[in-house]
Length: 296
Length: 186
Image (tube, rainbow over all chains, first blue to last red; front, side, top):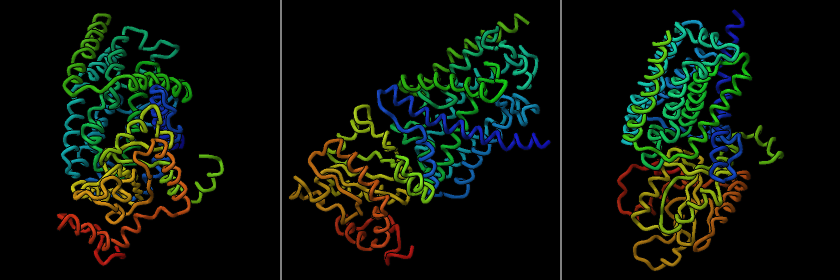
């Protein structure tokens, strides 16, 4: 019982540290790819300290509560995802609960943006929802394939089945893994799919009215979402990890690959993004599902 | 950032945060903006100083006024400056905001920018080199460290003076005063 409570306290803190470290590494690697020197790796921490010491603006109670709802949704989601050996709540609910709680964060941002009443926010939110419409199709197909293959909805059981290097990525599930990796940039909102928060087109989209500590909370939410989607990929396809360190190393590899994609590609327009997302990931994940159906 | 700073970090983390994370707003005034793309991209890389461009005034705390200020632009500058959250630093870039520069006798530009919004520092030259921006940033660090970069406090305290000057040039302003005109207690 005590261990359970400790895990519930520790795992969001670990996720926060890893997420903020990833934000710093993200900027550093992108800078090195652009042949720049780049900021110090603790720059996001400095930014967060600054943002929480700034004067804040508020456009009303929903504007404050929406961003808190998004952050709370992400923190709850962290509790359901096994991080190495640490899995506080992941025995209950499994993948279906994760699918439901994933809706919290975009909903909170959209609510908060509605109170902000800036046209750029509504464009950004609608783009985010259209993008979600694009990647959810293949995401659901991938999860369906996993549940069919392992005959369980529990994420702990899926991790358990992949022990001793029987990773899902090197099994008949490989096609689903590739499809998940193809939609991962769209889920994280990094290039080539950063249409929702494009600074040059729509003044950074949903974050346009955020300043001071709202923006700080938005950055923390972004750090959490980086952690969540990559941790989910590691859990589902790379066999989790026996301890937090190996899990972290696997996450680091996936993250650095994604950062390379971010550093190299330009941005899609929204209809190009949808065209891509409804074509290749869907085809690959459907093939994966059919393959798994035939094998079983 | 060096090791001597650690004591300051524990004493005033907010101040150090403002110092090392200056976010400049994308705002193009006149010809000086042509020096900004090299500064933020690969050749001079302002990101190593923590200076990045952001798209909205709500997120920014550094305002570079690059080049001559026409009367029409002054309106946008004041609105942008008033929307930025409070420790905010404004820097005039080039000789035109200082005293009019080569537009000293123009009918449509303002000569002294610091009559309309408070300025923390100036970068002289026509054009200044991109390195001058880094000199300005490091100098701004020193000013923040010594507590001298207080132009935003000045704006609040002498708001009546600034508002009168703004109204003299722009006519009646179509937005309410940011602080009470009496100045001070807001």
